Amino acid sequence: MTQKYAGKCLCGATEYEVIGAPVIVAQCHCEECRRLSGTGHTIGAMFSKSGFSASGPAKEFTYQSSKDSTVTKGFCGQCGSPLYGTNTRTPEYITLSLGTLDDAAGLEVQVVIFEGRKQHWDQLGADVATFETQPDWTPQD
Image (cartoon, rainbow, N blue to C red; front, side, top):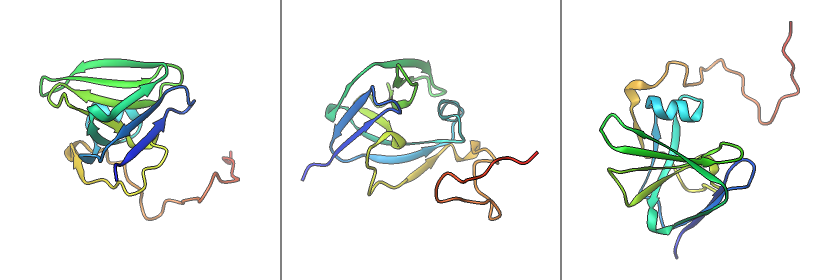
């Protein structure tokens, strides 16, 4: 049975589909991924580019990596959701932002890269309160 995954941006204007199993699922702590996500890391699933298709107003941003490859990040042209990344070092693959998949059941992080650049605040302490849903809470003065 062929695996098929679908996903979309926050506003739903840009949708994608990929057919096939992911090559790897990675969590990355590099500076570029931190800045792209606005958090301490990104998590992406790498797939063969041949099974990927997308529709909607995608925009792209390209930069040179520290390994002197060209990295392209794709995002929704309306809401800005980061959707995918490509790298000239691995031109036959595309990495999809795991949080944009409609259903990521069965996908688990297999590797962590740039662990040495992980920010000290990118973890939860034992004393951090957690809530099952949006809490009915307001900040106190």
